[in-house]
Image (cartoon, rainbow over all chains, first blue to last red; front, side, top):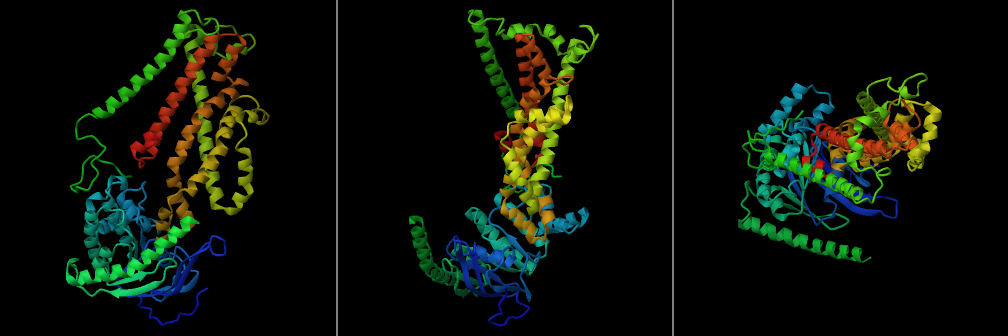
Length: 274
Length: 307
């Protein structure tokens, strides 16, 4: 049920969303609308941060773009093709570690290749290359539970990179990490992003993270999530988060978010009181 | 497969907890085992001591409740009753058949073999059925109501069925073990599948895994730890059931010995056999823990020992 796009788009666009809506448990009494009328164009190798109060449907949008869930309205295209199912071209990286605990690091990284029946020595080589890119060559034969949280997320990134994705979808990937590790991981992610040439859609509720990383910050309203505004950031990287420009951006984004957070909070309280 | 070497990476982020340092014996582990053995011995000693005390004070009749030193003391005397095979053969003398010691060994091996066979069959059958139920909707609709209906039926109720189907011998005993475990384990498998971390499944999906690949490569490994737990919990149940089945008549078997002891009013033999079963069940649990550790190499040790 894909409606005609309201605005034209080019097949070069990495991700195109047109009036995307999502209602969970549609047609049941428990139905609730998570997203409404999302319009978004993501250029190749663009870094987009999705910022919004918790529960605003940012993650839902990633799941829709990944093809893991079907849209309730509108349509999503990636490089000109409608998104109807998951594809190795669009890798999703989760907040919690999602490594297979029974596989070694290199087996985890080459899991996607093993699904395609690639022989083991070739897979091991591909895993070695991907792990070298995230600086974890020595951890090849480790098991996930022997690694720290930051290392596990780097392995998850390596696993995504091994599939040579054109779009990296990241659902608060560093949320579970401590502040120091998080800062390191942001630098690391920028390196990976530059060298991979992939577009990144990065969900976060941290304003600093969005200011440090993104070309454009998409600010969401609270439930149902709509695009409130898109803030472009035209600062060279690595960014000094204490520069006057960054300070101004932070103030602007904080103000934009504040209303939404207040509204979301009031709504949740009302829900809890029910 | 991944080998967990104790050689730490230069990366400081590596978890240093756990493994002992290079070259030295794992003294902490040894001390832990020794401590556990000590408490075990103390616990049993306390129980046996109270029993002996009751006997020494004349509170318990040694003919009915012979204290440990009595029924363990005449092991050699009791062992000859384990020869439950030749005893009933026409024309066989009391002294014919294997020596008493060998008869005990045969009996233990027979019962153990039945439990083990039953466990393996039940485990395999239950996982296959449980996965098939989640995999094929039609199969679920056709079988799940029946399985849920039969799950609460006591294994004892299956005893006549076992005899109708398999007569007398190993067949009904193994059948009883399987029936006692199967239904619960199918339901446990289904619950475990529902509990599999959605992220793991979604990762496989984004990498283009088919439904079959998701089940074979993600769901089954993910549910194994939980299922193994269920298996271990049901192990004692299997030992109880096998005794009941053996009582109906098999060659060698601990159930036969218990029946014999009951019929001949031999309390010493009863307690000796009970002790034997206890030791066997305990060792079995220990062995299963070792298998679990090897098979589920990825589950952290602290988690396994806590289970």
